[in-house]
Length: 498
Image 1 (cartoon, rainbow, N blue to C red):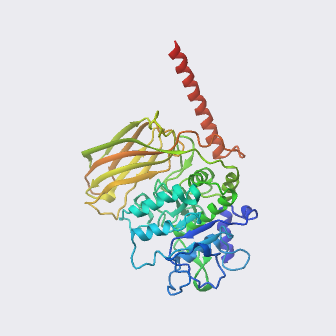
Image 2: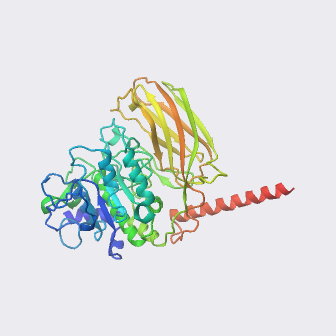
Image 3: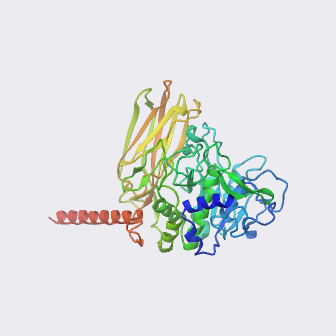
């Protein structure tokens, strides 16, 4: 039964064909609890080179902490030994660091965890974050933010550390854009679906989620979880939540790295957008939509479920995307922009995306709306942002358990991936209102638009092998835009001479 359950998820992610092609050498790290040696050496492939002073590798005195062990088994559990199941990248090496079972958590512990041996470790898988209670707003502090920035800029010899993050298990009561780890543009945020394509009961939705994998999701069958290794050499079918979804993605990304070790952290995000599939995914609350360049997305599932086969094939021919630039698209700072009790506060910013400057952003990757706002009940606040090409992102949905009336959001960077590939130039619209039974009041103090992306077309030089793919569609769009802009430049030149 364990093997059947494992292979069910494997086939949904289109892994089996790719397993025949590789002897996996990627190194991953699960920043969880200790990966104990209580399994008798029968499970995942550990990497002795990845040890550090904070790693409880040989100590077996914390016998109840199984979270990290289960996550590691999903990635690197050995194949063909009739034990438990098989890892997504069963030839990869995994190391772990003691983190979540510390007496207390600090900024320096988090920073040390995600910056451990960045030249040796390729992928960092994190199935942790702020409390999923529907009322917490929290994220990385100064040292951890710096560690993430250093990781993507300097890790892996400058190609960038790949951070994979679980979107969170707060369900419909929470919003993962209130989780500063999962909503960071430096992480790949992964949500989950159950095997029939429906949403899981614990799934949070937000505009920062990039893609999804599979996990359990219905209370009536606790044995329908993910098959993986457990403590004392045991197996389990009860691994669950987005905690189980993120390591699956890390394993798929390890396969992509085996196909092309030159992939950067941004390449991996582009590949995720281009190869994830809608398939049979069904969200009863949020419809699937297309953004301004035709890419299909969902507010909960992101760009779809990972397709390991498609990602690995595309990775083989992939050319590194152009340089990334950052532009402050505009900022509004006020003292008393009141949010009405009924209706919405609607604000607009028109931007040229720094055109004519060195940091011009033409093709979007991530967009951040840095917002300072207070409300008599933070949980009833709803924030939407619409791009110049008409794509609406739900930056914040109602959180019925959040009663905060004092703190609000202070320069909070709400992030969306839904405008991926769009032209940033034009008018952006921010809408703020309240959703709830009781009347509320609020004040917006700041909205700053941050644009991140490339000046040149990221896909125009990529090799297209499937002419029905999202890559083919995006490349065609880019070629047409380049031609239109060239014609416009020629016309301006001719008219200027006259």
